[in-house]
Length: 146
Image (spheres, rainbow, N blue to C red):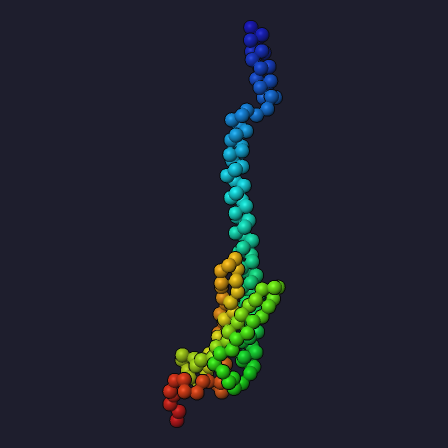
């Protein structure tokens, strides 16, 4: 009676030692065919997001610098200025506009907008601040003085 179970036990050990079946191999290949492209796309998206965040930070720094320089100047003669800053081989065109603040014609609102390209799409950062009262645009909105 012992010869039956012993021979079955040996046979099952041999099957386990022989390797993977064709079905198991094909299932593993199918799994890899699905997972690898998804992982590569996730890495591509993460890299693109990192590039956008770095360029947005550079654009914000440029806009802040432009606004700081504009607020230090008094009696600006024009309502708009523009230029281009190059950092890391990337062009950052900027525009500075000056208009009377909506809530007061005595204070000018300075707005710096910096544009940049990432993956063929244009993005921008816009910062605003209030300037010196002497920089208010003459004839912007009527005011009453006493």
